[in-house]
Image 1 (cartoon, rainbow, N blue to C red):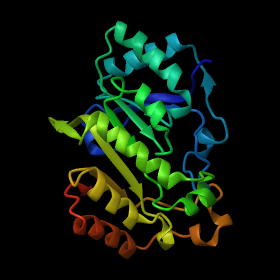
Image 2: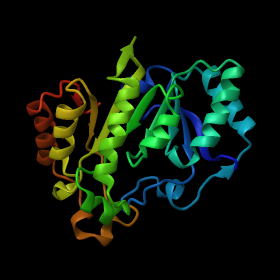
Image 3: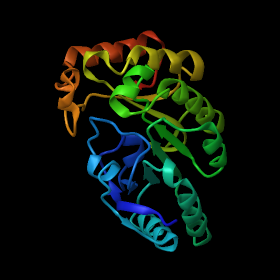
Image 4: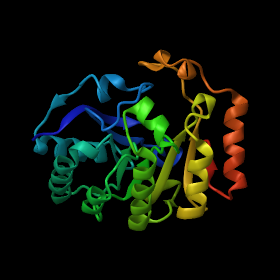
Amino acid sequence: MRPWVASVGPHHGEERVLVGGGGSGTVFLTGCVLRCAFCQNYDISQAGAGEEAPVSQLARWLLALQNMGCHNVNFVTPTHQAPQLIEALAKAREQGLRLPVVWNCGGYESVEALKLLEGTVDVYMPDIKYGDSRAAETYSAAPGYWEVAQEAVREMHRQVGDLRVEGGIAVRGLLVRHLVLPEELAASANVLRFLAEEISTDTFVNIMAQYHPCHRARVYPELARRPTPEAFRQVVALAGQWGLTRAGPH
C-alpha cells in the first residue's frame, strides 16, 4: 500500500520546542485510528481528504522539509500507515535526511507496533485524550482507550526517555499533549497522576485550552461548549500538585 497524505509543509502552530525558527516539518496523513466527535481536522482524519503518493515521493517531500529549514519531520496521525512511513524514512535517510522524527499520535497505540518503531522515532508525541475509557468509547469510538494509552506511553518512555531539548528544540524524548474538555470529560486528574507517578515528574506535558465544539460535538450537550478558564487553571494547578515541573501551556 502507498501512503495517503493530506498535506506536507512547515508548520508554526505546534509546541515552541518543535517549531523554533524554521517550523515543524508536518506531514498530515489521511485517516486516524480514533473517531473523535470533536475532531478539529475531521476532513483529514475521517472524511478522507488527501491523496495517494508513492513511497519515493514521500521520501522526496521529507528531504524538501529539511532543505526548507524545518527542525523535524512531524508525522500527524501516523499509526495506521506505519509500514509505509518506515519505508519512506529509510529511503530519505539513504539520501541524507538527518532530522529527528516526531510521532504525533492519539495515544491509542499497541505496544507491539511501538516496538517496531524503536530506533526510528526520536520524539513520541501522544495526545492522551482521556483518563477514562468510558468517555473514550462514547466520544472517540475507542474502547479500552485509557488502559491501552497507559501501556503505550510506558513503552514510548522506555524507548526515548524524558524530552531532551537542545538550543530550544526538542531532539529526543516523550512530549505529551492533553486537551482539557468541558465537564471534566477528559478525566485530566487521572492523566496527570499517571504521568507523575508511573512515568516521570520530568515529563513534558502541553496542557491545551483550545477545545471548541466542532464536527459532531454538538450532538452531545456536554461537549457543546468550551471549558471555562477556571477549569483550565485547575488542571494546570493539578499538574503542579503532582510535581510535574514541565507541565503547562506550551
